Length: 181
Ligand code: IMP
Ligand code: MG
Image (cartoon, rainbow, N blue to C red):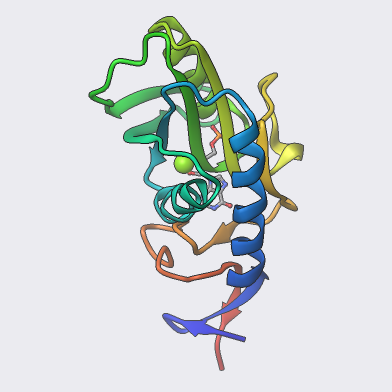
């Protein structure tokens, strides 16, 4: 088992499995609405997934423009939760097909906020691609159009995803299982 920062990391999805799903997802995305396609990666967690999926989109014949938006949730526990824009995109989305890319769809608050924002700004279509879908955690009526893996309810790290800014560099998705010997 890989040991990083003195912790055992149990792989959940290997680099090869992820690469295969990315190729499949890109083929499906290429069949959808892709008029003047704008891909928007939701930072920070999606940066590696987006980098790989965007290159798979090229292999599937697409030539999207690429943008980034940084979103963060606020409020915890009993306080009502919201999402705020930390860093916005620069492009105009009016009448364009947009593909949002994020690492994990959990409660759905982040992506619901992003999708509504883009429709309010006049996007023609907004679809969602996520690497992982944690369905049991859903709080909003929102589904992704393209899903890499249906993920069990573990806290996962790697392939861009972090715990306290660590483990983003791992080329696979894994679960921290404890201290190494
Ligand atoms: P939600 O769908 O608005 O609840 O937001 C999901 C976001 O929370 C993801 O985009 C991640 O940034 C973060 N997140 C949720 N679960 C995990 C996890 O298991 N590991 C790392 N980040 C997570
Ligand atoms: Mg995120």
